[in-house]
Image (tube, rainbow over all chains, first blue to last red; front, side, top):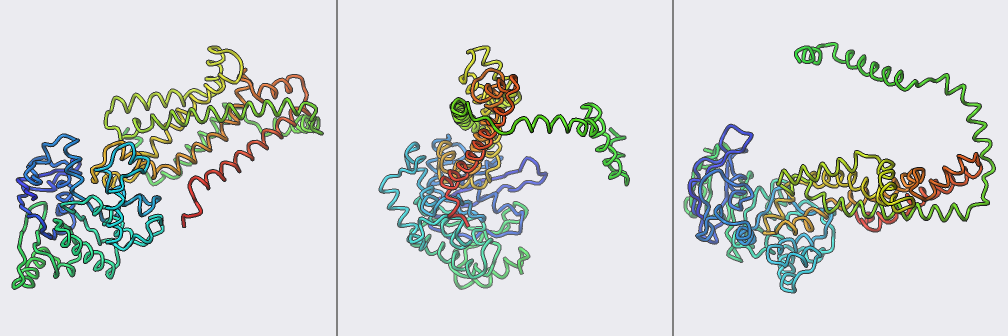
Length: 250
Length: 265
């Protein structure tokens, strides 16, 4: 599904490389947690997978296609299958929940009609289903600026689901939420991905949430791959503890 | 350069900056011959002028109202054409949307030229091109508004949160969709506010344009002043202030309706 080869990236205004020769292979439907201290390159890696950041070198294969070689039109087609959920929600605050969720259909919709908010019935059906799955259908006409942090992140999840994605990249999706909401949102995201067979790569800072459902944890330190473990049930607790100690979380 | 660095780092920096500011004001006051004495001496003449304005003379009110409507039409057309042109060009002058530096600098220069030349000067240019009347006024306002709003619009677009742009791009949207679905909803309130501000501003500017032959109430104001019909001058000023207040109230109402401000908490 996702294959990363020798991926390196250096930001223009920084001396240190943000990513150093990363090699990864993530299978379809996997639920992966990406861990690491601040500045370890987690967000850069996530953004590279959708080419929101263009890496300096390396290859990123999505379903066998190197996205770094794609022309803009082909890249857009790939992007619509890779949804991104951001830490700061990144919604259009003045617009309604429905309009924000419909933005998830932009990659599929006709340019002119979508600009004037005219979408196909199929688009509306998909958006309705996504909003219902995050329990926001009832407040679809509410403006996003009037919602709570948890509701906003659910809108962002609905937008991601509206893309009918094969992959969801979630960059610290719960960092801006209070602890109760964190658990709810994370459980919701994992449940939806499991149900729909979506590959989920999620960067996390809060380790309490790792104990359930994650099949794999990947650790990054100073832009390098520090560990990459499959978490089988019998060694889950032990491996997790050891890895978190190594990263300085505990 | 070293002296400047030493001064800016000195512990007397505050005092030096203070002296510099006072120096600038002294220089400006001397240059403009600003003098409180002259103002006080002139007070009786001012009082005489104002007292001759009363009571206002409404005998030509019909003509003045017709000319005011003409001025308003100039302002509406000039603002609308200018705002639409500025809107279309502003995306090419925003670094976060247009990455082509040549086009970016070209459009920015057009805005600078349009804005850098005053409406009155544009008025004079267009009067010499298309003759007297309100049409050169409309052209003058359109060109100036294009420059002014173009800069505001493009800078507003540039201030849109780059993360919001990334979020829309990440859905597979193209640039047109990004503009209409991601950028426009974010900048719409500012665009509308600036446009209405310029409508009000252009009514005042259109009045001044009348003084250079571009029609409207300004021409009547100039005639009345030249003929020392001070009571008519007051009538015209009353009409102008009334229209400005009316535009202000109307634009506030339309802004409220368009932006649905009542829904924002």
